[in-house]
Image 1 (cartoon, one colour):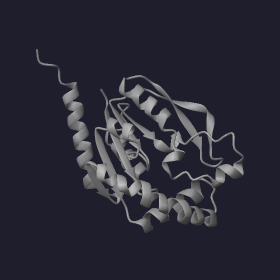
Image 2: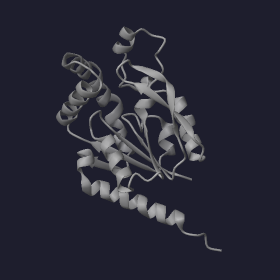
Image 3: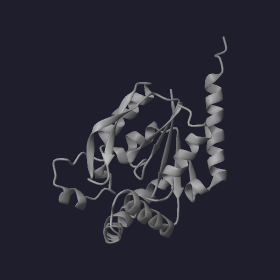
Image 4: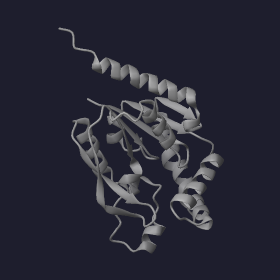
Length: 212
């Protein structure tokens, strides 16, 4: 069975960087795939753009957990999946999907990675990225303005009314489920090296022939 690694933490904490650093450590080996929980936002295409813009995407109800559970189960059974593709500019799920082949290492990253008990129980290694709020906010502002076409006023309003309360109520409490807490995310090379070493040992053990 594949090794499932979950990476949680606040928006802008560095979860994606940690996931990418893990994959890069194996030279982007096809044995390692990254699943972004953001891809599993519920399909709100039936609502107007104005309604979608006002929706809170930082709470558990925003995630299509049943679909995520089914697809993680398929990957655990070494079956391919068609992962949803989400358009952050229009706040909608796109018609096309992305084929994800089975892999030895599956990395799931997102703010709600540890929230759902069914998903949490699938994870073999649970990592929480703990980064100061001011750093997370600066990173979020830069990302949303550069990549998602958001205005500063929109980002500020959403942060204080949705993002910060959601982190306090739904994200930070899940830190207690973590096997490892990483301060400052992908910038913490020591912690990333420890994770990579653990994965390398697991892959080596998997490749050893069974004793008769």
